[in-house]
Length: 180
Image (cartoon, rainbow, N blue to C red):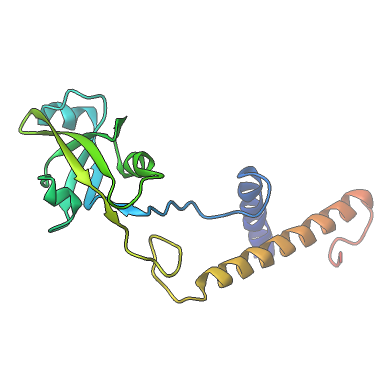
């Protein structure tokens, strides 16, 4: 059992180390603005079936009622192909295209509806304030502090494990059952 736990810890450590120097941070992208749509990436086959000639596109699954996209005329079933001059294929592309934009900014969109390429201009709205700083989870105020504490504990344990392994390598005849 201890071997399995140690192996899992080493795999976690290797993954964290491969991510780069410094403490690991969860991938987050917090937008200051909102477009008011939920999208999913498309495949070449789906784009062909929907009459989309672009190399990529994001299918609009839902439009926020009375939100920015709805006011600009977008509907569920539209395929966004360009946001602010940037070709888009999924939600991440859209967030990237809206980076550094401010609420109230006008953003041109290109989309396909019923096999016809259309354009619209959306006036961006402010994103709802998130207390936790994690866009996928609105939890208690102390969550970021708890997360940092967890990271610190993992880093200390990995340093301790590294030190033990170094000592074992330096002294191959050492009793391996109680290396501290």
